[in-house]
Image (cartoon, rainbow, N blue to C red; front, side, top):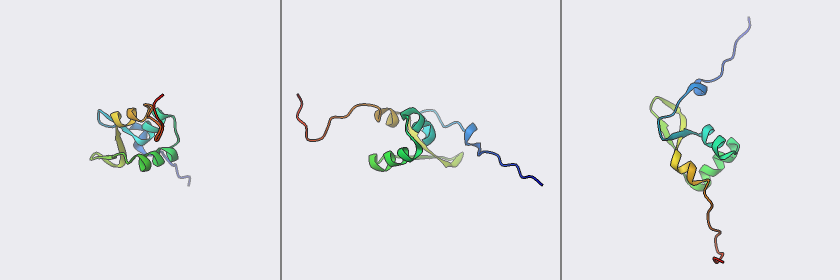
Length: 79
């Protein structure tokens, strides 16, 4: 008897307006999920849970967009 394995329903999951899943945020930043987790730890970004699906970690769109902006180097004087 063959057992069929199906993917999790996250492929059809739609986050609330103004939020991205970790996978969507990683895609937008063009990084791997491993790198996305490192960013979350290093940047101390707030993650959220959707009451409809507690397994999904969400990020605010504004927070992800902020990560795409250049930041000044530490300890360097402006030219």
